[in-house]
Each structure stands twice: as structure tokens, then as C-alpha cells.
Length: 227
Image 1 (cartoon, rainbow, N blue to C red):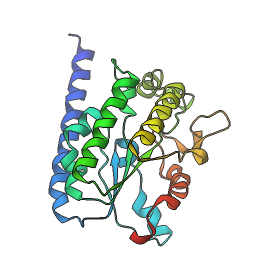
Image 2 (image 1 turned 90 degrees about the vertical axis):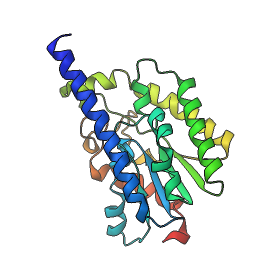
Image 3 (image 1 turned 90 degrees about the horizontal axis):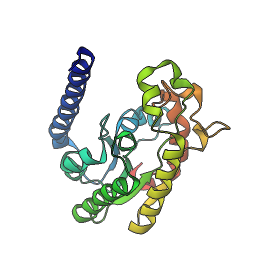
Image 4 (image 1 turned 120 degrees about the horizontal axis):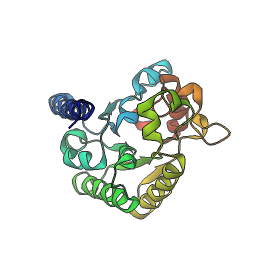
């Protein structure tokens, strides 16, 4: 094994441990949540959604718990459904999970949807009254990623074409399972269908202001009774 490979392996192990630590922190934090509120769950694109600050700016007093974990796949969410979903006993669940699956070497759309379906089945079994909203995956911008070797490599696989195909599959899954599919992306797409350059850090993740149009599109889908 080369030094570069050893470093890569060490980084992957460090990232795995960080994700495990976040799950443990959530288990402790969940002791203090109020049930029947709103839950955001998913990967980094959900974890980094500064929803509370944006809602405070608009003086909207929602109670929203965010259990996003950067780097999480559908495999990992299935392993931690209790800490990330069940233990909070939410009435409204907004999910953005699966973008990291798109970069897996053995990715298939069928596999993604099978695991996503298992996530929804688990929610229905444990929280039968919860309303489920499945967020469309955000677009990416490969041009912005050109100067970032890691992002460039990731977006060579996680293309907008693959994202759009996955979104269509997720939309069909929502129809099949009685969930609601939400495409909140109109305000963050440029004329070419890419994530707007001014909103993205490295072609994938967004700065805080990128979430402002996302939240604007989401507001009609937040429950009025939870304000």
C-alpha cells in the first residue's frame, strides 16, 4: 500500500468515526426533544441547512430538529433509524438522503430505491401517523468544482443527469408509498440546470444563502399548526 493509499484509508476511518460520534451525540440529545414536532433528516445537504436561523429571521417559531449527518448513505441511515428518526417521535418528516449513494462504486438506481423504500417502511411501521416529505436532490455545478480535486472527482460520477434520473425514481417512490415529493430547486438552478455558482462552496454543498430560496419554496409545505 502506498503512502497516499494509507492516508486515504486513514481519512476514511476518521470520517467514519466522526459519523458514529454524531449518531452518539444525537442519542444523548434526543432525551430532551419534544415529540410531535418537525424533523429534518439526511446527509450533509440537510445537516448544513441553517433552518433555525433563517426561520428566526422571518420570525417563524417552528420547532425543527435536524438529524442530518454529513456523508451518510441510505445504508447508514437504515442502521441508525432510532437515533435519527424514531426516538424523536416527529409528526412531520422531511428527508434528503441518497446523494452519497450516487458516488458508491457499485451504485444502482434499483439499489438506492430499494433502500429508500426500506427507510419509508420503517417510518410507517414505527410512526404510522407521521407525514413524510421526500426532498428532491439538489443540482450540482461541475464548473465550480474544477479547482477542487476532491469535488471534481466526485462530480465526475455525481452528474446532474444521474441526479435527475434519481429524482424521477424518488418521485415515483413517493407516489407509490403515499409520501409527498418536493422539488424545491427552482430558485437555485441556473439557466443550464446547474446549481447556481454563487450559492455553492465547491460545486455540491451550498453556502447559507443558497438555502434561502430552498426555504422559501418549502414554507408552504411546513405545517401551519406547528408555528
